[in-house]
Amino acid sequence: MPVYGIVLLVILPIIAGVAAFFGGIFFAKKKYEKEIKENPPITEKMIRVMFLQMGRKASESQIKQVMNSMKNAK
Image (cartoon, rainbow, N blue to C red; front, top):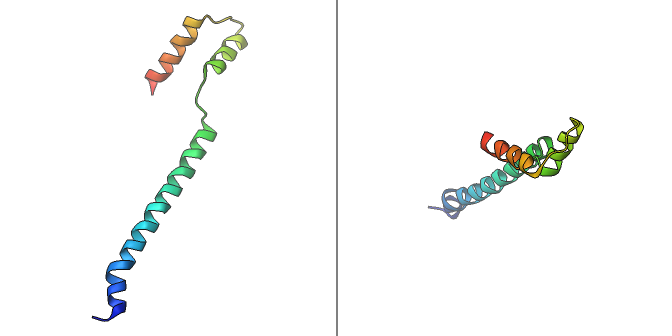
């Protein structure tokens, strides 16, 4: 078997596998960053602002309750 046959049968699939691996990582990273940009996670500060916009002063227990309900809803 000629040398180029060994290259085609052994080395080329390995190179293709490595390229696919890094391509998959790149694609997943871009997708994750886009998702986080469009839907940022809700923080306690955001919940406090939401309560203030409704005209209420939220207690710490209410904020914790809302945070727990958000975590359980996922």
